[in-house]
Image: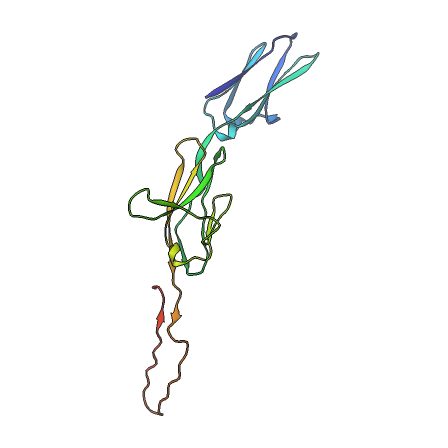
Length: 206
């Protein structure tokens, strides 16, 4: 809960007091309560949310003059997911993309780590810019080309100093595409005889 008071120190009545948010009339959807008496006005917000951040201007006027005072309300918001990362299946030398997009105020910082052991908290920072790892400003991780050594679990963390932050663990599976042991061969058979042709491929199931 927060409130701000606008008090007129001098001026002849009748006085008119009004509030603006970001230079616009305050919407009733914001749930803001405004009380006014002869020489002051109080703006109160019962449950502060990110939508309440902005500049609030109190305007006092009478037939002789109009004056105003502006205050900025900064609302710190802990991170929450805009796009939570999901597991990815791709083929060897393909592209794997993990979207990990968080929002909040201040803007959250996103980091990626790879799980390297069986015990909790065994992570390794990604060598972004090398080994096929590319990280974008919004938290999206791209692995290109995806190789068998990239397979495993990854941890995405988002934090902005408000609260404990959020995290999500995802799995990357890199499948080997079908491939033939032998590209082609030639078989001879007499007319009327039966010949069995064998086609063997290697790769991951199914």
